[in-house]
Image 1: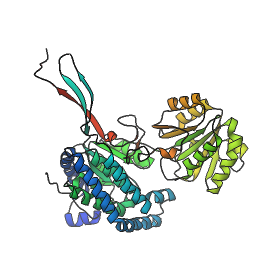
Image 2: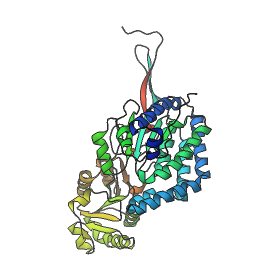
Image 3: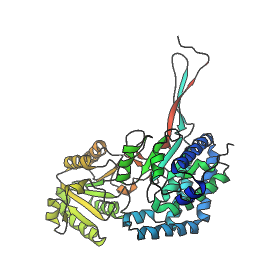
Image 4: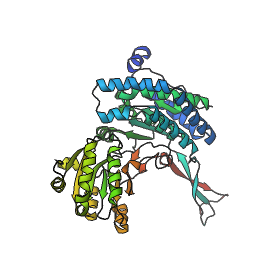
Length: 438
């Protein structure tokens, strides 16, 4: 088996002082190691990959207290540096979230291995036989902020889909990510795989990101998970192709024909289950015919949870405590206990509003009308479109993908929660028996 040495730099200062090495050289070393190890993981058997996933899960459980201790360091620094509540919520690890990481690893291990899957078999008049074979992309670079669980999600999906990966988490989670990375390295070693199959960049220097997104000789695709500012910067500067989403301005529309009990439950859950996540509802649209029946109840329930409501004039005429919404509020991803509310004439205005302001992430309708549900599901141009369900279900774990690498609002090469299949591509395979082109 190919042995690949993974560079190890405890922090940026030590890297520069003891190794006399700059970030460009460090990142090139990481890139070379990733490219070499991508050939190893691409040919690894499903059994080997599943063994690594199971072993990583065991190490996460065994090292639980170390993970929590490392995370407490990051949380304390985050508080001291004034991180807002949404980012602190994303940053925090607890037993429940570690359990979810472990469960995600087991789910990914249980999923069918997409690598080598053959589809579209056919025979041409020449006698050649054709098929498409699913194959790993190669080396995937992932840039993300705040959430340490992304380290496991990304590592597990890239590993099972036969890809090497370079992970660059946010500086605010560096201690948590390094503790998780140690568990990953141990799991890979247990399965006989090189540790450079998954490399977690361990310098907070932003120059590492600048290098990663231009490493076309080593990296096949970049997947960014972060705020709009990060994504826009990468769109401008990246030379490596990206699978991305900008933000999650998710909508819920309560239709004229809604079951109002369902609508209240869904509207409260979509907004208040968690605030700092991309699938939380940020804009609520209500058909005018039911607004007076449901908005006062919703307003009272949101008030109990200290959610600030910003609404149109029609909404404010029904509930006087609602603040006036600005034009910017209709397109904003608040990631906070803030909700924009608009009263619309019906399904036509709802669809027009959503398609104009949406970030193409997730939209849901509450209705018992078949024609309105059909129109909403057909005409809304987003990566997940839902009927009578909370937007919080737009998630790889909930979709049965085991975990997700991110939620893509692109249309090429994959869309929505990106799981194993989204981390592979296809190549044509042609079988012959001596045929030559006439």
